[in-house]
Image 1 (cartoon, rainbow, N blue to C red):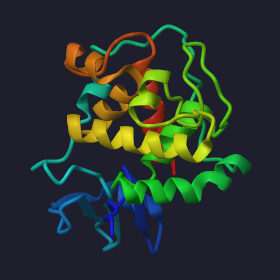
Image 2: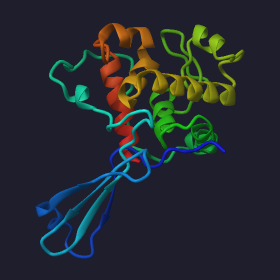
Image 3: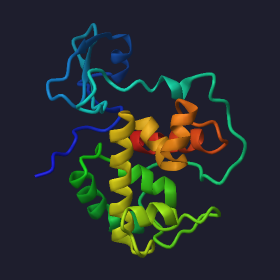
Image 4: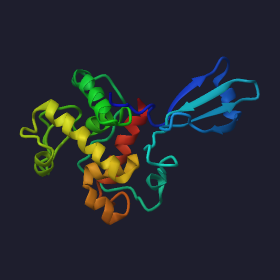
Length: 220
């Protein structure tokens, strides 16, 4: 059975039995993960309450957690207006609800970080299986014709085929780059562009695209 990565990025569970504001004065204590795929931190307040932060994902091939610092780097300047839609919160959507069981199955099959494929599909197409971009990308995962052929997808408007191909391609990018933000950038701009840039390509679209995917992923 395919192993499913535990946790989602920066998902926080607060165990507060009193005033939540007490946790703001806590002193953090970093503890190592015991499952090999994530981490957690317990902040102890003066009053004895605890705030437990769970689930920063990392590849089993990595010895440290992924460094997302490039996303906050001054080298990534605000981009000009582009085609990427502004990210929305994880709000109810009939189409999204209909496809989520397939998303979860694909995440498990390809051992993707929980919720990442959902965030990517939402950002790409808002779960519209007939979406077509100005560049010619189509379907739920907005596959380009060449990428679809390489992944064995004959009909990009077949929701299930498109979705599972998107999951497979995202898995390939995670295996290639080892960290989530570069894998997401490669999904959008192509692995060659990420390699040439030595990070997230500053092409006017990809930095905001990566932020949108990670923001939706962390909002759920």
